[in-house]
Image 1 (cartoon, rainbow, N blue to C red):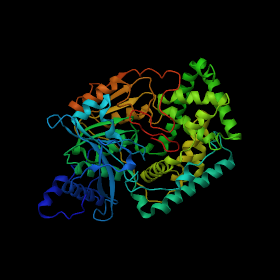
Image 2: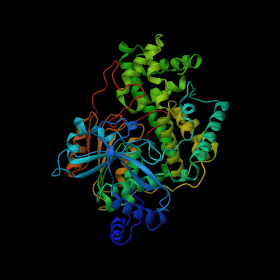
Image 3: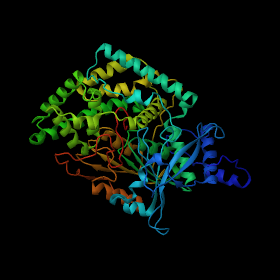
Image 4: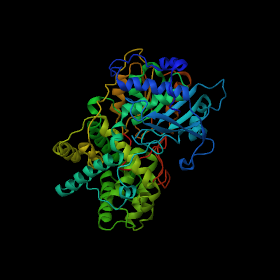
Length: 540
């Protein structure tokens, strides 16, 4: 996008880019950032976007084309420093008569890249949607080629083996505090003053500029996980710019939960989902030999942890790498067979499968560290966090008695926020009234642990007129375009016609995975949107 001054004839573009009055509960317009967003969006309309071949580093099929859209680093200074957002696209396949516009996708994280999204256009679940829409992905600010940030050398970030104490000692907590302080300092040192501009409100403003650059009068958006929060806040800030939105696996938008309390709730929900995995493994004891009850499966897992603490597999896979690999089972059932098979083989004396699935990959280190840096920056900048370690210690020591699987890993991932440099944003009180925005479609799995189901119910309450489609008894995180034909039918009908199910809808889960060795390969992408869960980077 060219940073061209817009005067004269372009003045009408500025007027057309002005957002409507905010919906009920939205932050008041008229701030410098609001005026800067108007300028940036108008500039994007004038510049448009030029697509061409994608860089080799994106590793996308030749059917996908790429571009860069420029946005202000600081919306209070729209003529100041500009950063480029990497964008990808596959044009609608149904021709001009069928085309409804662009469908813009955000995969969540924060720290996830949606650049791969257009490559899904040929998948059966997306075929009819891809006929009607240009499928558009992008890397949010800070991610990949979009003005990337880093807080720690990638090799240092991913090196193993590491420990992952379930109930850390005082000495272990002290080391964790020191690491968190050092990580926060590294973020501040590497990014400098720009770091303060990586937060959700600017991500939402970037969405508005992307809409304008794509030439869309209103936004059609698909957000997963944290991407649902961006969609909900966009609906507050730019209600008249909303066309259709699918919010898949939604974050609870209650400002009191952004983000410290939401992480406590997530850790508790992880325990229930970890129990689902152990129950499934126990039902297939004949295949895996890990125990006939969930308690026995836990004992097998704990034995593997103890063995790896004494002697890491391949010199790189310790308890921390084991935990990272098995955390993926909480996100997607498709990981269950491979993880159980690897654990079984390891306990029988063959570590090869476990090493293959859990060993840190040097080739992915930079991407993982970048994703975690963006996650940390956005979460820490978005809202106040407890600055007193005693609060973290009290809350999580108590929680770990009920939910030992993920609690302390979650603490260490988020603790840099206790030592983060101000300023911090104030979370938006997401709330729309009747008629503020068109009906929105919410999709949620009842046992999703990354974004617990209660958050979907609260989001529906806050977005007047929205409809909720529930996948009963299921826990995979990110269900659009997955294995549930009922979910996909509702999503397709909504995106193609705007129709939502009256009173919502509910359906059962897809069949559980069969025992054996199937599922995503270790370190690969799982979930309906190939979302990444590479601990410690996570979807929220």
